[in-house]
Image (cartoon, rainbow over all chains, first blue to last red; front, side):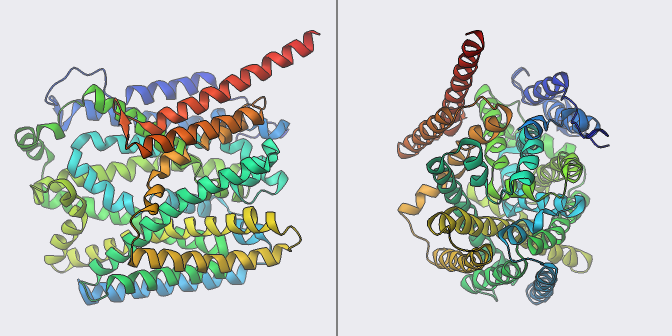
Length: 79
Length: 482
């Protein structure tokens, strides 16, 4: 669970994961949906809103699962 | 609700005072570090609770529900806004925590002094943060007064509500500093989280399925359901940037990063914090939309009263509905008080460390902590007076809280990430960004193309810092080559 290895050095953060989070953040804003009245609905929620919430859920999942790989404390260590 | 609610709130306030006293008993040294950072010993659970309670304010509870009711499904952006704060923490908190531990930082300006060796810049940063915090605190005091009136059913006047609640905050805070504040935050955070869940369940039960509500909104208020326009999307993205950058460098947020017991506690707290927007602002959005099924037709500023109206409707049923409604009102009060106590503690620490200690470096840590406690009462007195008799002219300046605060973000975040960032570029970026934000405010320009004026100013600020980093790298390369 910890990002800290036995030798006390932090792991390098994953750039790929960072870009995945940025990409999901951009996709969470529904700029790419064609203009419309919000249909279709999923249990009463417009699809664009469902997609947006799904993006935020995916970001949360990535951080929860991969936080050790996103944990960059190298500047503080090397200073 | 009047009498029952007043009794519940009175009990709640007594519990807060007891926690404050316990915090006082746990205090060991009279140093600034012990008082303002709980000795740098906040473990996972308490750290998580205090991060949560200070990030989600009374505005989340009352204002965000109204906003969801007013603008509809696009307020799902608030989930992204709150999540971006945690994502921004991840970019600098790990390193900043280690630096704080090693160099004994107490206030955000301690980091600026250490990183850039520039006392003038540290003072300016401190001033900008203090202005932003005053705004924050003032808004919480106003909200406390209004809620006191609402909870008591008008039995407690506005001024009395502000004085009593501010007094309770002042007592438990000066008793135990961050230790007391963090422990009370744990209670307040739990109340907020479960309060919102209760309201969602009860409102859902009464409103029934969401589908007919949405279908009706498509006819009556189509803009609440329709795909957001490009301009709205621009505002959405800008809000994520503005809140993420601004709230991640709130002084009380930075101080909690300093106060974490170790990296693992901080990491575990942020791991949970990233999920909290889904179950906090996500729930708020759902309540705001479902409220259309129970209380239709509120427009403009009326929408801001939707949560109290919902609670009043639940209480009118009596029995369980009344109990939940009282508890949820108390949760709202808890959310406001937890934000107010954090902002107040941070302000007093900045006064003691960044102002008094700079002018009188001969004073002992113990004396500075005592001065900090006294300053808390001074700030409370000013805020209470202003809440009861709001000024109208100069005070408008503090309305630009976030626009001002995000100008601090580049020199903090980029300063941690890029050791090449020179002090000159950080200072120039901060000054230019702040001046641009102030000019936009003076001209009354809030947004351009849906994007906040402060975000543009911050982009210029970042560009100046990036240029400085590039220049420093080139100089280093030339130096190496020669």
